[in-house]
Image: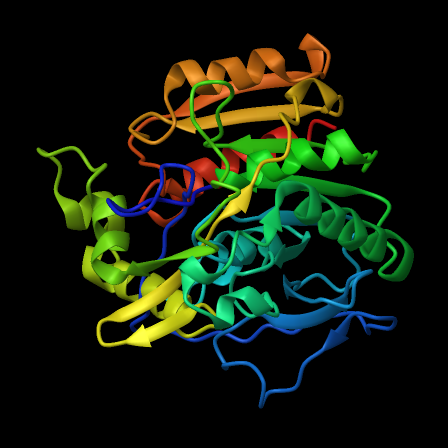
Length: 353
C-alpha cells in the first residue's frame, strides 16, 4: 500500500519501513515446491524472514518472492504487492514480533500468502544501473515491466504451484502496479484490493530523463510515517498499541529495509529509493474482477477524493466493488495498532467471492 516519500524524494514514492528489535519467526510452506520457484536455504535468508523463492523472468532477471503458509493444503493464494519505496518484507512481515505482519495474518486465515520484491527492492536482483551513482543513468524500471513480472508470478502460482483461486492486494504504489497488470493482461483474480491508492489526483512516475534512483535515509522514513500521525495523538499508542512502543515498530521495519539489497551506505544508514517510469495511464477501468478500495482515514498521502475517484473508475460492476475507510490509521496503517481492523476488512471482502 505504501511507499512514502521523504522531503528529497518525489511524491510518487510511497511505502514505509522500520528497523527491527526483537522477535523472530521462520515459517516454512507446508507443501513441497517444484518448478522454477525454489526455496533458498537457511544460509541465504535471516531466520526471521519468510520462506524465499527465486523466480527467473523472461529476460533472465531474478525476482525474489516471499511466502508464509501454515495450512497443509491451502485452496487459495494471495499476492501482496508493496509500494514504491520499500520492499515486501518490511511492509508485510517485519521482525517486530512472531505474529505481527499481514503475511502472518493471511497464513493464519488458511491462505498461502506470497509477496514479491519488485525490481530494485528487497532481495530481488538489483538493476545494473543501481551500481552507479543515481545521476549516471535514467530510470530502468517501469510499470509495464513490473506488470509483466507480476503476470509471470501469477502464471507460476497457477501452473506450477496449483492455485486456481488467487487474490491481489496492492498497497499504495501496488495499486498502480495492479492497474498495469490489468491493462496488459487478464490475470482473472478472485478479488482485487486497492489499498491507499488514488486516481487522477496524485502525480506518479519518475522523470524518464533521470536520475535512476534516489538515496533515502532513516530520518526521511521516520518523518514520512510519523508526520501523518495527528499531533494530539500518543505516538506509542497510535503505532504500537498496548504491545510495542513506536520506536520498537519503527526500528523493526527499518531493519528489514536496510538489511536487504537496497542498502546503499551505512553512515548514515541509507537505502536506494527506486524510481518507476509510468509509460501510460493504465486506467482502472480494466480491472473488472471484484474490487475493494480501502483508505485509512488519516492518510495524508492519498486524499479521499483520489481514493473515491479510484473506486468510481474501477471497471467492476457496482454490485462487485466496495469502498471503505478505516478510522485511526495513516498511510502505514498495516503496520500500526489498527492493522488487524484493516486486515479484517480486506479478508471479509475476499470471502464474498
